[in-house]
Image (cartoon, rainbow, N blue to C red):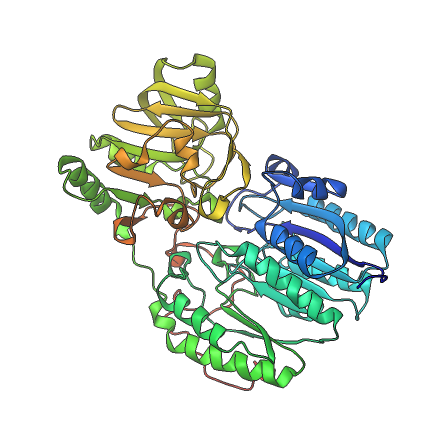
Length: 513
């Protein structure tokens, strides 16, 4: 490509998985995690431990290797899953992205790194709003390619505004870099003349989060089947399980197929996948372990070293799904039962972490969790405790979802509650990486049980310590309970399985569905 002008490709994204039942997500939440504008994006990409999403890093690396191009950094925001984004802050970012895109015209392509399950306090499809804004700025001929989390909720507007939507294929998510690289490859194909056509089909199936693992199970089967249909004329197959707690009209397992030229071919493949997915829809019922049974198993493991150690997943209070990360149901039950050699992490309680830092290492005090109860699930709990270790919370992810990503948990404290050691943090984060515990001096391999505030991403981080059969998904109250009948959905299409057993679907012409 010597002598040709480098292709100018804009990079932007505003990532949030919104739980409609959680407190609103604000500007400060983004500033606590990732909020980069303009050249700060490029500076982060050049750092040893970038904060940016792995898919952006993958996109850039593939473009660097395969194309004479110039990245045009716009704005990238990334935050832990939470409630609807404050609408005024969303509008500010939408306008800022538009202003910066217009200032950089003409552009040869736009790459968008979004989650796909964002809602604002006033708008149910801000991801569609962003993609439509981009299309309005660059026009119909400029490639617009986006990567999405497989928990994204896909609207018709999103499919119409983007040329290609590329969703993750692994859960726990460990393929973000590869999906970014795939997006870059598609952009390069479009530079060579490929004009993709996409089809969307949505089923009346709203899978609980614990049924969307891709190692085994119904979702793994349909993801794998979809990939067998990728061919010379099928550019991408994305099967998005969606995120029920967003509570939107676009909820439902979504199949997005992109063909290299024929919309009819894309519709044909989408329908084949949908038929197979619906044939398996009854497999999407969650199976959880009652709290009292989980406690009994921990006590048994503590008494008998011959039994395998356990990892308890507090799936109903997963910060990665909008949970507060501070419910006490499991911790209190284990404490009352006298469990020992247990690690619990990570509990979000800035006030308690600050008190521990004020007291200093070695101090004994009465720890009060949730001294101001934020909601019906995060109730107050008190216990005698000793401050074991204090850290500033700065770390780099070691494995799985957060691998090689610089993280900040804020002031962090390790407390000993008489045989139960608890890691308390000041920035809400799901416990998906063992480094969050190891940086506090904890030896995970020596614990008889570990309790994590995480739904599924802990599996990729902690699998060096716990095999699948050592995982216990605990049924407890919380904002991310997989028992969807516990939520008062207002916007989600009904009937939808498994909330509604009577939900039905039959193959019909895709254009009419």
